[in-house]
Length: 506
Image 1 (cartoon, rainbow, N blue to C red):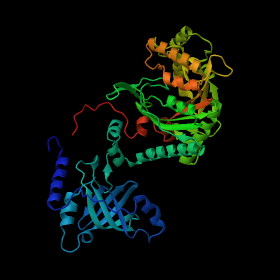
Image 2 (image 1 turned 45 degrees about the vertical axis):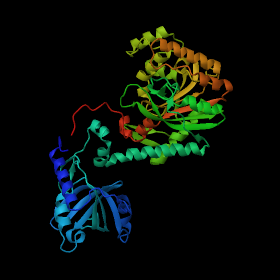
Image 3 (image 1 turned 135 degrees about the horizontal axis):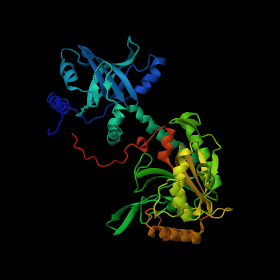
Image 4 (image 1 turned 30 degrees about the horizontal axis):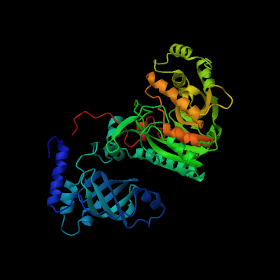
């Protein structure tokens, strides 16, 4: 059992055995009657010293100072930290000093979870403190927290190595509790978005994660096999085609917060598993959807911070409406000096090479234009900007532009140099859609691993008739990164995907 354990881990296991010998269950089965939190005490007690005279609170020991018959602890609960004051004669009345001298002094450790009762007061040093009248061990910690040393102020290891923080998020949350704010803001963001969409009367739905055909985006899927069906299935790369089926079925507006999966590279902006909100509204177009995105994201900023201006790295981002709008060709010309409109694939290939943009032989016209935009334009777009009117080769699911040949009615919102959302006037012509899918098959033959597949059931649905529809996909992780001033997508995911840890760990 003790093989490979460090010294501190052995000491803690010995303490565990001693506690059991003393008849103390280090993992008691019953709960603990918590009636307040650290945050509630610190917020309300200074205003009314008659409050909190019978508190019951639980949390983790984060520091302790033992001074003979009295001691100070620092307790961490889910809302913050608070100081505890313990007197031996309070928690060990009479002549029985075993609990204090043996259990508290020797067998309890930093990291242990305890429950205490008592009353709140302010020390001579002016610190809000709980005078403990009873103490109960709720969980013995068998591994030490990453504390460098214990002093009066309990100096903690910063635990800043990103890889270890992501691998051991539970430990990160204990020793760096300030990161909880990122995830609280993420939840607030989703709540704000959901409330906005519900207020418009749109229906939140669920669609399949396991799909017989992947579709709705240009991406490489994860593949699996279902034994009972004797069928290959794919983790969805998007839920677009299922939500459009619901529009065909008669719903006027549907949305879904979906976990999507793409078997692609990983970096600080990409995780193989990510969250999108997709929305489809009948009888609308992409111009209408731009106004909705502006209004919704502005509301989210106000709900989170009470202002439309937030800090993102070295930039101040203002989400106040209206946002700037530029066409794809306009923005490429602005940042490269080249007008690419109407240029054939061969010429675009030469231009990309002259601009030192990496391309390969699998890339057709649409992918080359996308590479030029991503390399030369996107990083320069800091304030929220709509990029509109994409070449048809880039957008097999978008409707042809009503007045501009060779383009489709599509926009992306770019902010802080990265895409936030993608939206179309959705293609509802089943003949045109079949031709676009067939073009994608040809790209697959060229070796494009992200080409779309032909979905006969979806085409059948379109043949029954889908009304004019506006569609939107907005990346929750990317939006959270900007709204919380986070530099990596791993910072806004509790458990980001990591390479297998091949190191031997204790």
